Length: 113
Image (cartoon, rainbow, N blue to C red; front, side):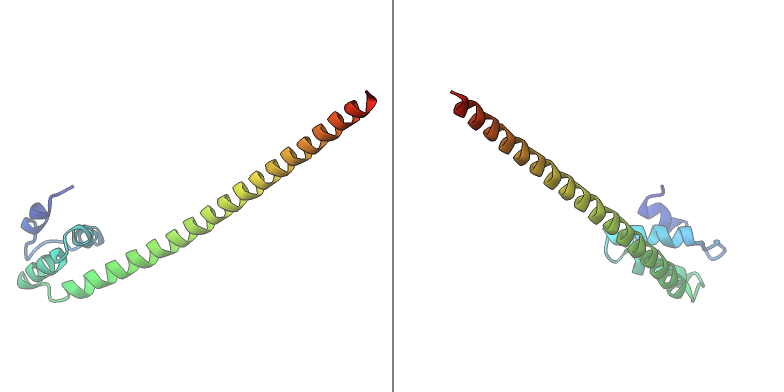
C-alpha cells in the first residue's frame, strides 16, 4: 500500500482515476482528517474538476454497503447471543432439575432409616 505522500505524489493530470484510488483517499481521510481535501484539491488543480463529485459517490457507495454489512453482522450476532442465552438457560434448568432429584433421593434415603 502506498503511503499518504506516495499517493499525493502519484496525482498527475494524465492519471487514471479509479474507485480504488478514491477508496485509498477515503482510508487516509479516516485516520488523518483533512487528507481528502488536500488530495481532492490537488486533483482539481491538475484538471479534474469533478474529483469531489467522484469522491463523494465512491464514499457514499462504500458507506452504504458497509452499513448494510454491519446490519447483517449485528443480526447474526444478536441471534448468536440469543442462542447462547437459551442454551445457558436450558443448562441451568437441567442443573436445577438434577439438584431437585438429588434432594428427593436424599430425602427418600433418609426416610428409609
